[in-house]
Image (cartoon, rainbow, N blue to C red; front, side, top):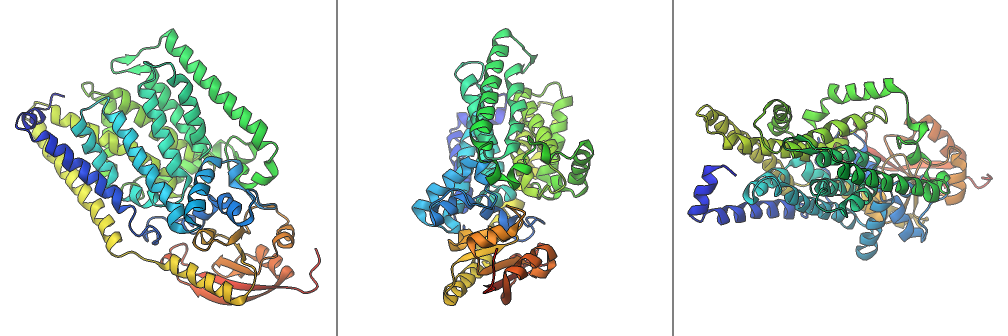
Amino acid sequence: MGCTWLDLMKRIGWLSLLKMLLLTIIICFCILRFIHLAADVPVGTTWSSEIYGDEGLYTRNATAKLITNKWLLPFESNPIVVMPIFQFIEYIFLKSMGINLISARLPGVLFFMITLIFLYLIFRRFINGVLSLGVLVLISCNYLLFVYSRLALNENLMLLLSVAAIYLGTVYNKYFIHAVITPVVVFLAVLCKISGLSVWLPVLFLVLYENDGFNITSAKLRSIALSLLIFVALCFSYMAFVIKPYHDYGRYYLAIVPIFPESMHGVSSVIYAVYKIFRNGYLICHGIYSIGYIAGIISMIAIVFIKGIKHKRLLGAFALWIVIYVFAGGIGGGYNPPRYYVLTVIPLISIMGFFIVYLWSLRSKYAQVLKVASVLIVLGYISFNAGKISAFIVHPEWSFYTMANDISNTVKSKQRPGVILTDIVDTYSLASGMLVLNLETGTEDKKLKFDRYQPHFLITLGPVSDNPWNFQYIKEYGSIELLKTYDVFENYHNGKPVHFYQIEPHSDINY
């Protein structure tokens, strides 16, 4: 591809050896993801409470099906109504391997590995095999991707399907069948997470743009129109046959999906949310954890102004994907935990990798300085991320796993039904196989939930009295006794330990 050092290595037979070395590195970083899969999320990954609850919330209906033999829980919010694809896959793994953290988190690792395959197929259309593998090394060793690919989160499947849609966009012009497959893939991504919609514009950009500029033809427009028509038809069909009849079961999760009016808070909230993203430094501090993220941003800006840079079709699509995704993250309000932006890591690293490839194709003597700088950046990036991954593998923490085992043993010793209320620690359900109900979601009349499920235990983040509204409902239902407290994840969500209570329903309770 114009790189003389590659030609030289090919002539002396080292190119195949380099490919094998790069592939080995990628495989090693994939294998590391399977080690200590049930261990704690590393401290400092996020400021959010997501690590206590999101895995449990987004596998809630899969576990409910296994525990109660029913997909939907009455008087509870059921994410499967809005986000069903991930739940069905989780159900298969939990059914075959049992309800535990390892079987729940295993799909995320597999999704990441398949994502790498699609990325390789994409890169190979623009650069040669050895350079494609080089960029994949940068992606596979990323610490943030390592952490989140090991969790039972919708984002991992959404990312895989989004990358698959990008791949289809690169071959869209050659095979008309892709005009039919692409909207189905994007639709499935949306059924994992509504932010999967962000991949549509990059796909359309890939279809309409060629390396020399936009090339809009009637054939392309017909294909795009067909794709959008199929996508819209799928969305409206799903809303008519699933959302509408099961709206009451969706509740909280329907409210946070931007296509529903109750979740929109006006232009001002969008502007504030985007401002908050940058103010809190998510895109740098919670991105790649190193200069690699900053280098990716610089590279993204560079592709706009450098006329001679190749592969602008792909790089422009990746840059557009980042911008649309980040903006979409601000639509729903001000929560925006760092995991929302894990998706941006892959396109940014890809842009950085392609930009470095461009630097090495330059013949100018002044380019030598930039080449040396790029080597130092890559080595520093790999060393930093690989070091953090190694440190975690060597010294994992097990605070959540230990807490879950202790709570489970206590519940069994109390000889009470294993139905547990929580305000945020929903992931306990995956570590115990018990039915966990969330006080913050579902029906506003919590008495209905108490009456239906008659819980005997309560897990809260911080004392239950910190939430007077929930505390009042619980006191009306029964008396509570604090059994234990636990220091979990070093209490890095507002410094609150987990509190474990026993509830004894009032004998005269009558709803």
